[in-house]
Amino acid sequence: MSRRRPTEKSRTPADPANLIRGRFKRQRIPEVEAFTASLPFDRRLYAHDIRGSIAHARMLAKVGLLKPSEARAIVAGLERIRTEIESGDFRFVVADEDIHLAIERRLTELIGAPGRKLHTARSRNDQVALDLRLFLREEIDALRALLGGLRAALLGVAGDHLETVMPGYTHLQRAQPVTLAHHLLAYVAMFERDDERFAQARARADVMPLGAGALAGTTLPIDRAMVARELGFARIAENSIDAVSDRDFAVDFLAAGALLAVHLSRMAEEIILWTSAEFGFAELPDEFSTGSSMMPQKKNPDLLELIRGKSGRVIGDLTALLATLKGLQLAYNSDLQEDKERVFDALDTLKPALDLLAKFWPRLGIKAPVMRAAAGGFALATDLAEYLVARGVPFREAHEAIGALVRETAAAGKALEDLTLGELRQYSAKFGPNAPGDATDPPLVRSRRAPCRAVPRQARCARESRGSPPRWKRDARGSDRDDGRNFPQIDVGVGDRRRPCRMRRKERAAAAGDGASAAYPQSARQRRGRRNQSDLGTPDPLRRRTRDARSQRLCDSARRRRWADEGAGRNSRYRSAALPVATSIQLSRQRNQNRRALSLCRDLRNSRRISQPAFERG
Image (cartoon, rainbow, N blue to C red; front, side, top):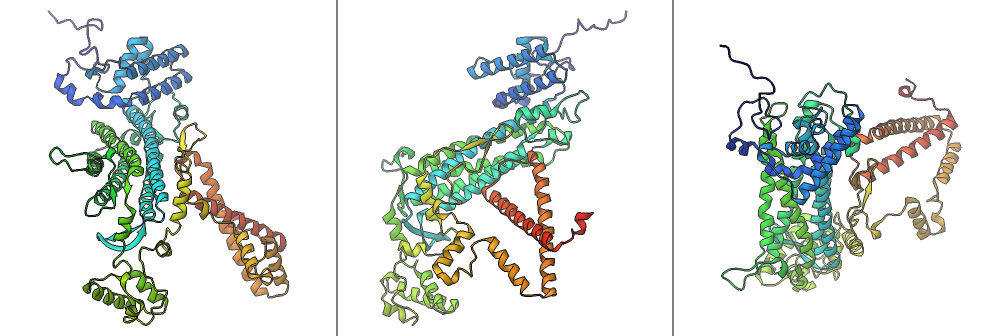
């Protein structure tokens, strides 16, 4: 008697709770389910998964793969699921494996057959890539806002200590006096670079992978551009295999996060030193300190020590993801499930650290007299050597003379500030009555021509605008992006803003007297007129040809740059909208230079009939 083959009605699925077990006869053992499930941690992506599914359902309805009524039912069901998760009423089942299947299972329970159509033309491979990119875009914006808050806090403290002198260190040995504002703005510069790196990481995450399917796309007529527009993506992934296997954007984020953690660790270490009894530069606020279970006098910087220690976690997250990716063949592998825990851990470490440090700095008790006293001693040596150099002494001779002065002064138990003019002249006759005598004198500290000589003005500007909230604006796609003004401006302070060149020429001419006005013409038109008059008075054909050839080369170069700018402008929607402030200034200056060169080119053509260059005629 032959065995009867089971019909479709008699066959039952191995696991009715799981939507993708139709291929298998037997259920997985619980240990396998627990080990392979990512639901315990990727449920954090629920809002982004629902947002992507809503956009996908609307697209399916537009192309005719769903009825409009089915799309409306799916959207309503997904919104209900969002409410259930946020209220804590959603039941998570480990058998669902991940948040994607958990939401789809619940959607099918709520609306029936239309819920089974949601996954049309989509794989979990491109779905999880979409969710992680949506998540990272949002979290990077939040992280940059917290980073801007810390920078604003540092600028506020710097604005309160423009005249506070402290010792600057090299090799952890006292080197030269600096202001506390100058020192704090070094950290601001670090965090500026961190902000740029996070902006670049966000730009690389701003690519829409949905539509790549498992790895080779789909034969169904989908509209990826519609989904990208609805989700606010700047670009669409061009290669389906790369779209599902790419995690470079996560590595970029973790690399920026690891370097930020290193910067926070350096800051925490320095504050720990400052608040020790050996330094005594600052006092820990009670709200951020912890005590000892045995020693009642202790006031421990546990917060700072943990920030310093947790930096290793973020560095480890980067290393772990790199180690995961290094051996993977194309395209998707379940190894990539490990990317989310690394990203989540880095975010959960960095965001509280940034928030706490922004609250910590305004409460830190700075001991300005102790800092100033520590900045004395032999820190005046470099200023004395440069004083001699300014009076014609070769630097090596000045260095040797001041070195001998320091050696003998230290042996005598004195400081350089204690020496008289007569004692100084024993080492060099070039010393005069105006020789530096106090290394901690704020005017002397400010007189150094350091690259950030204008930092007092920057800090003062920040002090005036302290407490201003981050400023954001909407781009053409309707998504939030940073416009370069998300924290009090320090690149160009109010007192440091340069005036136009024409105004400076007027001021120089007025300062020099009436006779100088001819040397500084008031406008470009007057200068062109003077050049034309000199041309009439100098009928030298060789000189004229040389000048015309040089102008022609300038015109050709300007056209090439303009065409490059126009080409970049046509593709601007495929680039990140957030540019560093310095880059925006450079682009603006280049465009102005191009316009001036093209204007000169038109004038020359009208007056001398210069022919077009060969590359332009072709």
